[in-house]
Length: 164
Image (cartoon, rainbow, N blue to C red):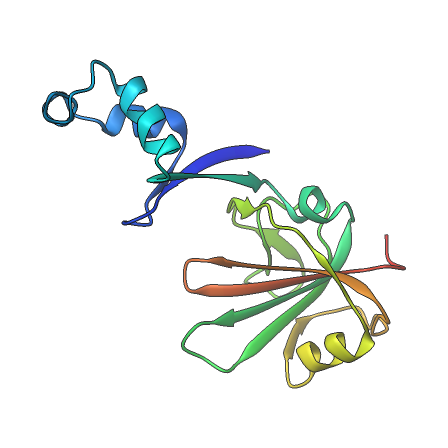
């Protein structure tokens, strides 16, 4: 698990050390703080810096080795799906340039709570999705659903109940 902090107004994200080094002497003096640590603690308590936890991979998020990942760009209606085993994949699974394997790009994945999705919800999500990688798995009846954004990418992860 990785802990980072997002600036409420700018959306910038960094770990505590990054934020501590970002406070300039001029800013600290102007705001009346004796140290960067004091400014950081104040900004966190005031809600200006929002604590977020991140995972290194989908196995850490879901507790499973495999499932379905749906990707959608915010400005597009196109949904792409990858059905795969994501164990050992750093970040989100992507299809390799050759199209024959799954790779990760090492993104930090926001730790979000999942909720149970039934067959109807899964069917609605998958309907019309372009499946970029799969080994012919059956559509699951139930799954835990995790939703989050990374930049302009809307991501939905389905961890089916009866998959490993």
